Image (cartoon, rainbow, N blue to C red; front, top):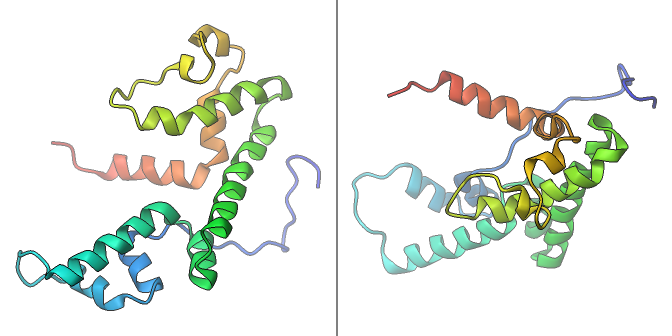
Length: 173
């Protein structure tokens, strides 16, 4: 289809989001553990075997993530390679989506910025560093890629809108 066109009547919209840990527990057949952590009667440590199982499932959730397709693939075959393939395909989808929102000349810069995000998010200092995307880079090197943040927002619009809506509706202290 041509850019900007939309196949009216041929698309079903589904509202989907990532599964949070309690949802993951239910999907993994550990609904009893979900109920245990969601309905605490009093605050006290869980018995050793229950605590160990929760930690094991939490680590699994950390690796798989909350993406429904990745969770489904894992639960079907317990195949970490298949899960990683799904995760990579989803990430590649974001990169390919840049082309819809930015000129072709900006795609390499946007891709470099995108690929630097995980390392930057894991740092103690949360300030974005262009030099992490390209050695020696400064904001002026990426100035031609005007609106890079806007492109990222467009490429992940539903998540961006939700996070902005949450901030707007959160009471300030």
